[in-house]
Image 1: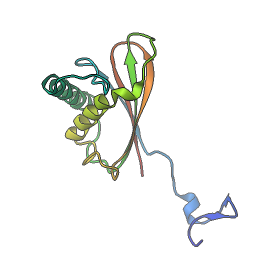
Image 2: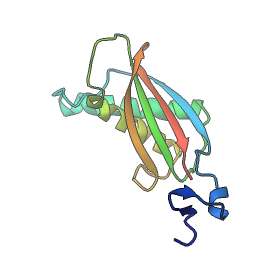
Image 3: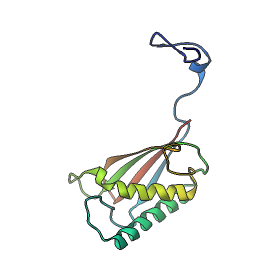
Image 4: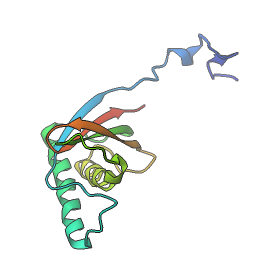
Length: 143
């Protein structure tokens, strides 16, 4: 196992053990809801759904710009917390189309070149608690 830095299940002291494997930088981006969430369970006509998608994409781009996120990163991990004004139970993964539109807006901004697996880990979608309708996105740069 030359260069692996692992011997017998314990970390060795070669040059690989000195290399940082943790996150490089972390940013938090708050996107206030420009409209209602796009839900996988809804049977919305394509035209209103396209308007909602455009609204979320535009809102994410504007939030990224306002937050002065960096541009041209190679790889990031995204975790998104959905904020709703109620504590009523819901299936957070039904809101994945909302997050897809938001990530597209962040890519349009230029954070990463594209939202393929080569540049993006996740997105991980989580229930974020009670508050003003929106999404809080945590972006962690990966090596």
